[in-house]
Image (tube, rainbow, N blue to C red; front, side, top):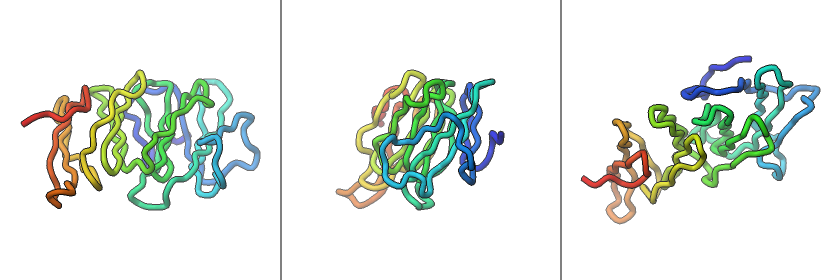
Length: 189
Protein backbone atom coordinates (compact mmCIF):
# COMPACT_ATOMS: atom_id res chain seq x y z
CA UNK A 1 0.00 0.00 0.00
CA UNK A 2 1.26 3.46 -0.85
CA UNK A 3 1.45 5.67 2.23
CA UNK A 4 2.79 8.91 0.75
CA UNK A 5 1.65 10.89 -2.28
CA UNK A 6 0.42 14.36 -3.10
CA UNK A 7 -2.48 15.27 -0.81
CA UNK A 8 -1.41 12.86 1.91
CA UNK A 9 -0.31 14.19 5.30
CA UNK A 10 1.02 11.87 7.99
CA UNK A 11 1.97 14.50 10.59
CA UNK A 12 0.50 12.34 13.37
CA UNK A 13 1.19 8.73 14.34
CA UNK A 14 -1.53 6.40 13.07
CA UNK A 15 -2.63 2.79 13.57
CA UNK A 16 -3.79 2.21 9.98
CA UNK A 17 -2.57 2.25 6.40
CA UNK A 18 -4.57 3.66 3.51
CA UNK A 19 -4.39 3.61 -0.24
CA UNK A 20 -6.38 5.84 -2.57
CA UNK A 21 -7.66 3.69 -5.41
CA UNK A 22 -7.87 5.08 -8.93
CA UNK A 23 -10.50 2.48 -9.81
CA UNK A 24 -13.03 0.74 -7.60
CA UNK A 25 -12.17 -2.97 -7.19
CA UNK A 26 -14.18 -5.38 -9.34
CA UNK A 27 -14.87 -7.40 -6.20
CA UNK A 28 -15.62 -5.20 -3.21
CA UNK A 29 -14.13 -6.07 0.18
CA UNK A 30 -16.53 -7.67 2.64
CA UNK A 31 -16.70 -4.40 4.55
CA UNK A 32 -17.60 -1.34 2.48
CA UNK A 33 -18.70 1.99 3.95
CA UNK A 34 -20.15 4.99 2.16
CA UNK A 35 -19.74 8.53 3.50
CA UNK A 36 -22.13 10.16 4.08
CA UNK A 37 -24.42 7.18 4.59
CA UNK A 38 -27.20 8.65 2.44
CA UNK A 39 -26.29 10.49 -0.75
CA UNK A 40 -27.34 10.43 -4.40
CA UNK A 41 -24.78 9.24 -6.95
CA UNK A 42 -22.04 8.75 -4.37
CA UNK A 43 -19.81 6.81 -6.75
CA UNK A 44 -19.59 9.61 -9.34
CA UNK A 45 -16.16 11.14 -8.65
CA UNK A 46 -15.99 9.67 -5.15
CA UNK A 47 -12.71 9.20 -3.30
CA UNK A 48 -12.19 5.44 -2.91
CA UNK A 49 -9.86 4.52 -0.04
CA UNK A 50 -8.75 1.03 0.94
CA UNK A 51 -8.02 1.03 4.69
CA UNK A 52 -6.14 -1.61 6.66
CA UNK A 53 -5.43 -1.98 10.38
CA UNK A 54 -2.70 -4.48 11.16
CA UNK A 55 -3.64 -8.01 10.17
CA UNK A 56 -7.38 -7.26 9.81
CA UNK A 57 -9.06 -7.59 6.44
CA UNK A 58 -9.04 -4.25 4.60
CA UNK A 59 -12.23 -2.28 4.16
CA UNK A 60 -13.29 0.21 1.51
CA UNK A 61 -14.34 3.79 2.23
CA UNK A 62 -16.29 5.51 -0.55
CA UNK A 63 -16.28 9.25 0.21
CA UNK A 64 -18.73 11.35 -1.80
CA UNK A 65 -17.19 14.14 -3.84
CA UNK A 66 -17.99 17.67 -2.84
CA UNK A 67 -16.79 20.01 -5.59
CA UNK A 68 -14.77 19.52 -8.77
CA UNK A 69 -12.63 22.58 -8.13
CA UNK A 70 -8.89 22.93 -7.60
CA UNK A 71 -9.62 25.16 -4.56
CA UNK A 72 -11.39 22.27 -2.83
CA UNK A 73 -8.77 19.77 -1.59
CA UNK A 74 -8.78 16.01 -1.92
CA UNK A 75 -6.52 13.74 0.11
CA UNK A 76 -5.88 11.84 3.33
CA UNK A 77 -4.63 13.14 6.66
CA UNK A 78 -3.61 11.37 9.84
CA UNK A 79 -5.41 12.80 12.86
CA UNK A 80 -4.35 13.57 16.44
CA UNK A 81 -6.13 10.35 17.54
CA UNK A 82 -4.09 7.55 15.89
CA UNK A 83 -7.21 5.46 15.27
CA UNK A 84 -8.95 8.13 13.19
CA UNK A 85 -8.47 9.00 9.52
CA UNK A 86 -9.42 12.22 7.72
CA UNK A 87 -10.48 11.79 4.09
CA UNK A 88 -11.30 14.90 2.07
CA UNK A 89 -13.03 14.58 -1.29
CA UNK A 90 -13.44 17.84 -3.20
CA UNK A 91 -13.70 19.84 0.03
CA UNK A 92 -16.05 17.43 1.84
CA UNK A 93 -14.18 16.27 4.95
CA UNK A 94 -14.95 12.91 6.58
CA UNK A 95 -13.38 11.98 9.94
CA UNK A 96 -13.55 8.20 10.25
CA UNK A 97 -12.87 5.89 13.21
CA UNK A 98 -10.82 3.12 11.58
CA UNK A 99 -11.71 0.69 14.42
CA UNK A 100 -15.45 1.16 13.83
CA UNK A 101 -15.84 2.65 10.32
CA UNK A 102 -19.56 3.19 10.77
CA UNK A 103 -18.58 5.92 13.28
CA UNK A 104 -17.70 9.07 11.38
CA UNK A 105 -18.13 12.82 11.45
CA UNK A 106 -18.69 14.92 8.35
CA UNK A 107 -17.46 18.48 8.77
CA UNK A 108 -20.39 20.87 8.49
CA UNK A 109 -18.40 23.31 6.34
CA UNK A 110 -18.74 22.50 2.69
CA UNK A 111 -16.27 23.02 1.32
CA UNK A 112 -13.28 22.79 3.60
CA UNK A 113 -10.67 24.79 1.67
CA UNK A 114 -7.55 23.79 3.57
CA UNK A 115 -6.49 21.14 6.07
CA UNK A 116 -3.41 21.92 8.11
CA UNK A 117 -1.72 19.96 10.88
CA UNK A 118 -0.25 21.73 13.89
CA UNK A 119 1.35 18.57 15.25
CA UNK A 120 3.23 20.34 18.07
CA UNK A 121 -0.15 21.20 19.62
CA UNK A 122 -1.95 18.02 18.54
CA UNK A 123 -4.41 19.84 16.27
CA UNK A 124 -5.72 19.36 12.77
CA UNK A 125 -7.15 22.63 11.39
CA UNK A 126 -10.01 22.82 8.91
CA UNK A 127 -10.25 26.17 7.13
CA UNK A 128 -13.45 27.31 5.46
CA UNK A 129 -14.46 30.50 3.68
CA UNK A 130 -15.23 32.37 6.92
CA UNK A 131 -13.64 30.62 9.91
CA UNK A 132 -11.76 27.53 11.04
CA UNK A 133 -12.21 24.51 13.26
CA UNK A 134 -9.53 22.69 15.26
CA UNK A 135 -9.79 18.96 15.89
CA UNK A 136 -7.73 17.38 18.69
CA UNK A 137 -7.19 13.89 20.06
CA UNK A 138 -10.53 14.03 21.91
CA UNK A 139 -12.55 15.53 19.05
CA UNK A 140 -13.61 19.11 18.40
CA UNK A 141 -11.17 21.41 20.23
CA UNK A 142 -12.61 24.76 19.14
CA UNK A 143 -14.31 26.73 16.39
CA UNK A 144 -13.18 30.27 15.64
CA UNK A 145 -15.43 33.26 15.23
CA UNK A 146 -15.93 34.69 11.74
CA UNK A 147 -12.47 35.67 10.48
CA UNK A 148 -13.45 36.72 6.98
CA UNK A 149 -16.43 37.40 4.79
CA UNK A 150 -14.85 35.43 1.95
CA UNK A 151 -11.54 33.64 2.26
CA UNK A 152 -9.21 32.92 5.16
CA UNK A 153 -5.45 32.92 4.57
CA UNK A 154 -3.00 31.35 7.01
CA UNK A 155 0.33 33.17 6.94
CA UNK A 156 2.25 31.34 9.66
CA UNK A 157 2.14 29.57 13.01
CA UNK A 158 4.44 30.79 15.78
CA UNK A 159 4.25 28.71 18.94
CA UNK A 160 0.62 28.78 20.05
CA UNK A 161 -0.38 31.64 17.72
CA UNK A 162 -1.71 31.40 14.19
CA UNK A 163 -1.32 34.52 12.04
CA UNK A 164 -3.57 35.03 9.06
CA UNK A 165 -5.80 37.41 7.18
CA UNK A 166 -9.40 37.63 6.08
CA UNK A 167 -11.41 39.93 3.86
CA UNK A 168 -13.47 42.51 5.80
CA UNK A 169 -16.77 43.48 4.16
CA UNK A 170 -16.95 46.90 5.85
CA UNK A 171 -13.46 48.07 4.83
CA UNK A 172 -13.23 46.05 1.59
CA UNK A 173 -9.70 44.91 2.40
CA UNK A 174 -7.70 42.06 3.86
CA UNK A 175 -7.44 42.39 7.64
CA UNK A 176 -4.80 40.51 9.64
CA UNK A 177 -5.72 38.43 12.67
CA UNK A 178 -3.95 36.31 15.27
CA UNK A 179 -5.59 33.28 16.92
CA UNK A 180 -4.65 31.52 20.11
CA UNK A 181 -4.37 27.91 18.93
CA UNK A 182 -5.20 26.54 22.38
CA UNK A 183 -8.62 28.29 22.50
CA UNK A 184 -9.42 29.51 18.99
CA UNK A 185 -9.92 33.04 20.32
CA UNK A 186 -8.43 36.14 18.73
CA UNK A 187 -5.30 37.47 20.37
CA UNK A 188 -5.31 41.18 21.12
CA UNK A 189 -2.54 43.45 19.83
